[in-house]
Amino acid sequence: MQAIRGQVLTTMLAVSVVDPLGHDVTPEKLTNEKLQRREQAGQ
Image (tube, rainbow, N blue to C red; front, side):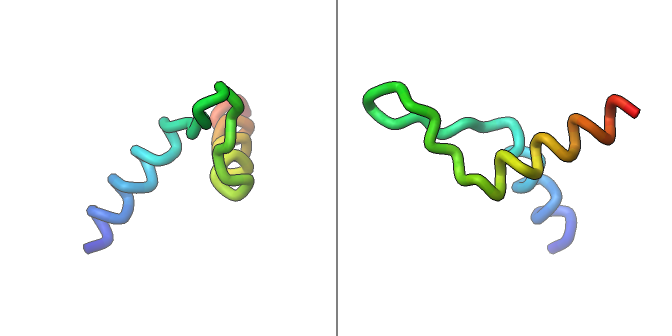
């Protein structure tokens, strides 16, 4: 079960949600997690 959760999280971190007008409506929590992981990878 843990492996599946990890795969889902990895997939979600690679996705951006865009509304029909082209605005990014990715949930803030997901956007913050993406930023944190990018910062950690850069260190």
